[in-house]
Image (cartoon, rainbow, N blue to C red):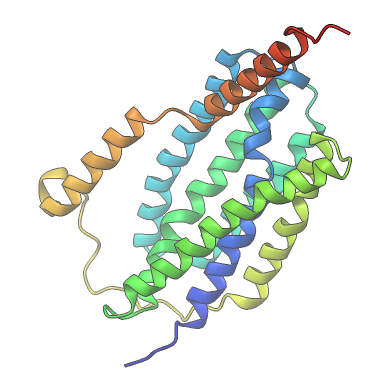
Length: 252
């Protein structure tokens, strides 16, 4: 039994860390950028984020279908990460919320293209005994990047950079991960299956898969979008600051 993760899993884990670092340098600041800098209202913030997430979900179905039918998984993965990490830093040059909408759409297209083939590649690169460890490794680095990205953005803002410059700076980890994929990700030639993939039908799914899908859908419907949490937190901080400024002052 092997005790070390395959090279493919390690590369994809590092790529996930760099990608989430780049993404989370931008995502927490984006609602404030839309409202405070570009003058958009909360409805526009909801439109941008709603369209972005819906796009990613739909494209995941398409990319998974393509990967099952013999499309080159490496091209889908590299292409998806490249699209996202090209579109995101360009938000720093946006002059209106329409540009942000288009660039967020492209960012999520990239996410949809890469996610299903990447997960399928991790699964096919490991045996059953190591599969949980492989996905745990990838997800831990993914969440590690999601923690490091906002901290890096905060540090850059404290250093004196504007939000636009922080967005543009996200291209650095983006370039690093694309180079890592191009020169580090090696996929053996795929063996063509003897039988074509079966058609996806709800009634043919395992009961555990159905339960997971329903639970995930219910959780998604009940979850407040992070963009609105950021706006509410910012409004609360502004209100608190106003109360402190306008509150009673000691008499000299």
